[in-house]
Amino acid sequence: MGKLKIKLIKSTIRKKPKHKKTVKALGLRHIGAVVEKNDCAEIRGMIRTVSFMLDVEEIK
Image 1 (cartoon, helix red, strand yellow):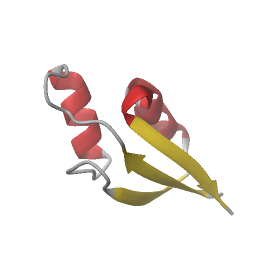
Image 2: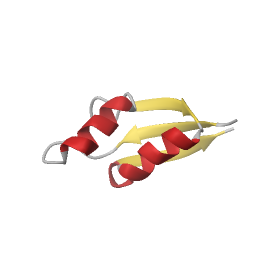
Image 3: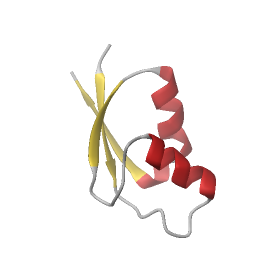
């Protein structure tokens, strides 16, 4: 199982409440915030929901 490096590149202002909650659940609080998460189906689904706001990179 690999890891994913997730970076928030767009603001959550004027976004749907569902998108705001997803970003918060990923552990991202502000633009430029970076988190590392395990690569699993649940995280991939969350990323897919707000992919237009994120930059995702796979880490070996």
